Structure formats: C-alpha cells, structure tokens
Amino acid sequence: MGVVNTSEALQRARAQDLDLVEVAPMAVPPVCRIMDFGKFKYITSKREQEARKKQTVIQVKEIKVRPKTEEHDLNTKLKHIRRFLEEGDKVKVTVRFRGRELAYASQSGFEVLKHIVEAIADVAKVESAPKMEGKTMMTIVSPTMHKKKPVGGAEKPQATTPTPAASKAAPQAATAPPAQKQEG
Image 1: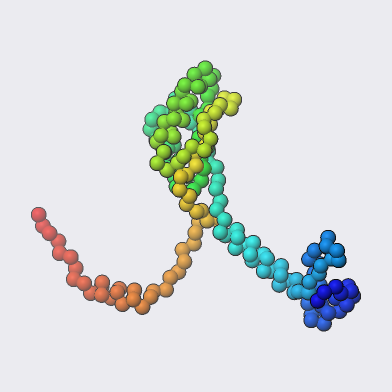
Image 2: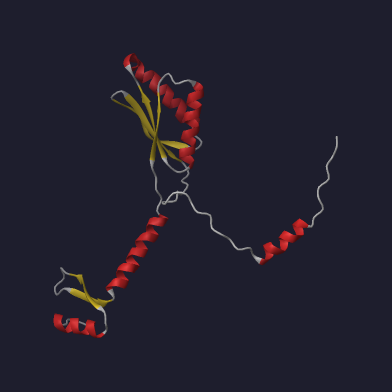
C-alpha cells in the first residue's frame, strides 16, 4: 500500500475486520501489516510444535564402574551401554577410584576403559578420549548410527485399516490345510 498515515492504516484494518501489526519497528518508516493476528499466532505455534516433533533428542547416559569390577558385572554394564547406544544416546563411562586405587589409576582405569571401548566398537565411536578428573577417569562414546528417538517418549502404535488386497489374502490363509506332524 506504500507509506500510509497510522490513523488511515487503522481505519483500513478495521474496515476489513483485521489487525494492524507492526512488523519492523526499527525501519524508517516503521513497517506494518494488516492481518488476522490470532490466526498468525496459531499458525506459528503449530509450526513450532511440528518442528519439535521432528527434532532428535540425544541424552548423555552415565555408566559408573570401578577398577576392580568383576567380569560378569562389567558384561552387564556393557549390555546397558549397548542398549543406550542403540536408542541413540551418548554414554559417559566413568571409572571411580578410592583410596590406594588412585596410585594405579593411570594403568587400571585406562585398561578398564580400553576394554569397554573395544567391546562396543561395532556400535560406538569414542567422542572424547579418556581423561582424569579428580578421582574419576571418564570417556564419552557416541553411537555410530543415529536412531531417531521420539521426543514425547514412546511411540504410539497407529491403527491401520486393512487394504482390500490384505483382506482377500487373509481368508485364503485360513483355508489352507493344516500342517501334518511328522513322527520320528
């Protein structure tokens, strides 16, 4: 419409039963637009909601072990690490030291972390190398393949309607003769 006086722009907006919305207040002269502001807010909230649905959420899970953790317990921790990685999360593996264990931290801690990283090498890659922070040694591993995780928790199964081809195939399967047992 070009440059229009504010009162005239308000009259035009009221005549169309719409709102006068200031789009760029810093421009000279300020830029305004005649629109249905409620509808605009609704559309932008729907776009943001759709964008949140499509985003991938990656969490950092933590697994704590000790330098003298037994093999069976370590295998259980490895199963948990694998599960976290398959879900698409990163895993922070922490080795905690107490008392005299700290004197041998560089050897035993690196050995434990090296063993864990080698065991999960097929599904993970090391994101940060093992490093010592106080009485703990830690490394972060991330999944090599990213499985998208739903934002809102578990996915809801969707109801499907049978297609005509599927409904025709079902009765044929029901009329097939039963398999006979073999005795041996």
